[in-house]
Image 1 (cartoon, rainbow, N blue to C red):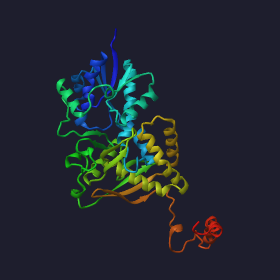
Image 2 (cartoon, helix red, strand yellow; image 1 turned 120 degrees about the vertical axis):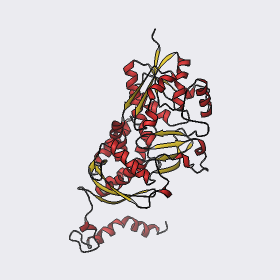
Image 3 (cartoon, rainbow, N blue to C red; image 1 turned 135 degrees about the vertical axis):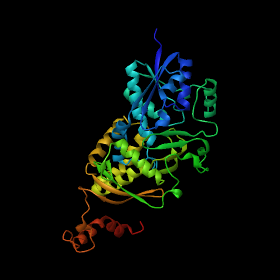
Image 4 (cartoon, helix red, strand yellow; image 1 turned 180 degrees about the vertical axis):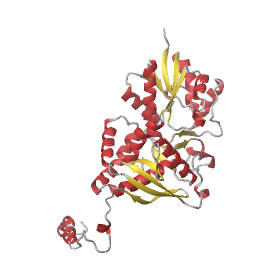
Length: 402
């Protein structure tokens, strides 16, 4: 009788490395590892197949998902200007749906009956992965070892790795939990667990300390078409090349550091430190171009819906009908968001300083303080009187302090 096949969402990090032998011990199965390349970098991906097999995996598949991820997952969030709780740029939240989709596709291809992940019971990622499984393959069994095993901490996990001869990059003295992709890198754990501790200098990986960034600002121009970036300094680039270059330039100038205590879906607050240099530049430019090209009612509608869209992404509801419906709205609303934005990078800041668009709604003739052929100041008398009429009636009847 053929052994049960389980496809594990695999990163090669501490948790997923020890899950391979744990699954074999407790499920009498073949473990097949799956990893999607969304820009983790060569340090994480090099030799990943061999590492998985050394841990006991029957196979390891690595798919290059970088372009698909940016086009179909990240750029929709850019169109929406999606930011969670005003600060978190959703780097991990946007990544989990495409990784789960690739994992499910591999499970179907090899005839697996179960999928597994290394997310803890305290985290958001368990929800993101499992809601994706429910949407894409509800018949698959889901195995979450962190809910079942007796490992309670990263120190316990390191002990387990030692006993099974599994080499991992985490250590007892430098024990940060990191998640990296083309959009960002997140850091949690270790000294960061207490919000009273400033992030140690060894946390940062993508960005220069703003105090040590170049004194001379750098200005770049970012081209957009229909709400998403397409080119840099007049040159059209593939999305992965564009974002990589922005990460490099932003990182040199210390752009994109965020240190926050966010509200996790499961209820507790979690301190996270994030570096998102390229994403910070993209969103600053997109916000400026949106303001130039969207008329007032549509702009304000989009602004009201940003928290709803961000919450759907953060809480793992990427494949939910509500997110798809909002995505359609943002795609329609941002069709005019085409043009070029000049952004200045200076010691940790990215500031849009100029923007042009063939769809610009700014009229110098209307806005000027000088003579205007398109605006008659006398028209404002009736406008102001009628606009203030409800308040004026209330004041006369009820008094100004009512």
